[in-house]
Length: 104
Image 1 (tube, rainbow, N blue to C red):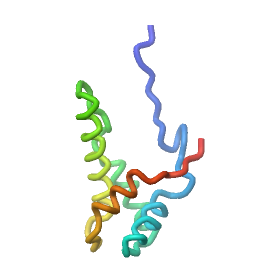
Image 2: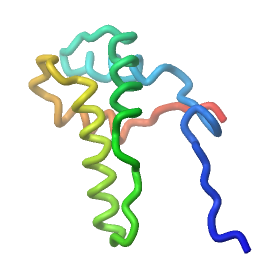
Image 3: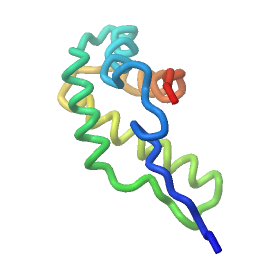
Image 4: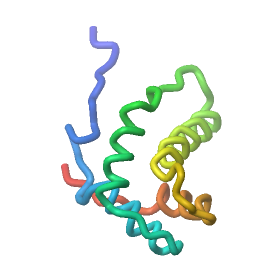
């Protein structure tokens, strides 16, 4: 009996159509912050790799949404750590909920 199937989705089943650093750079520029795409892309890879697993067993749907939101915010905060970004929270909302085009 199969109890579960796990997939490593990112860069396996699908990938971003453009580098994440490029997406963040373009979105940050809308908030007056110019950052090199390659720099952000490298930082994202490191922050994502070092992040704890995105797994929160036994929580309610509402708790899950909050935990996932803060998990992503922590990663993106690490990407922009040390960069003067006064409007980070509005940027994060736009970056999190904006559409990232993916290829399957």
